[in-house]
Length: 253
Ligand code: PEP
Image (cartoon, rainbow, N blue to C red; front, side, top):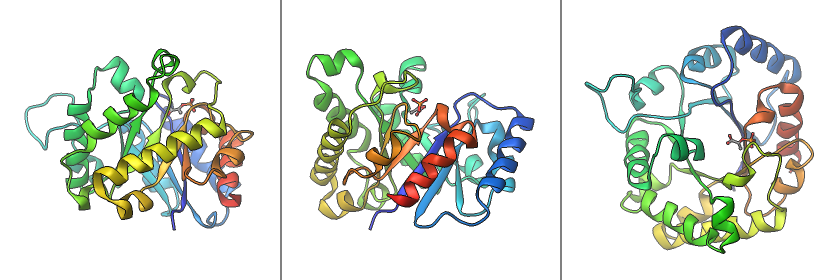
């Protein structure tokens, strides 16, 4: 039974004071543990320690990127072990903004997936097609390539640790959300692809989240799609006022 996951990606936002306000607001909105779901927050690296200390244990905390190296002379990089040492247990890998602005390709992301698992982190592997790719009818081909090149060669036990996030690039930060029919179709396709790579059991257990301009208004219908196991939320996760309704939609789905 796959639990719904409500995840927030803060991108490059929030200073320490803002983080403390968010934590205080979280405790106001949620006095007890929201039942039957997982919640995960991905702050910038600088917020990992504060979030871990300030949030209840049931909220998972993750980084937005990880080095493909274990340790050593890689100035400016942060390793999986360092992320785990901060108390975090997860990491986003292959977010479209990393693919687009930092030229991260599938082969690099494959190394990051593997090193994240070795470091004890749950990788949230993000895949998604651009608007031009969708319009050209290439969406499934692009997703298949991202899945295969990113994950092929991982062991079954590594693959079992992965959470997938389908995030069409044209829906991220644009206010455009894919229709629930399109989302369900793509998630079903992704599950079939995972089954082809790692077998039906891994595919049936692998959470597949949707991301792209999710709000409290769109979350309920998306979360009720059979192959949608949660949502990855950018803009609307920055304030509890907009994030709490999405968490509540997860509880009710
Ligand atoms: C994201 O950054 O992963 C995302 C989905 O952003 P937004 O919800 O703002 O579209």
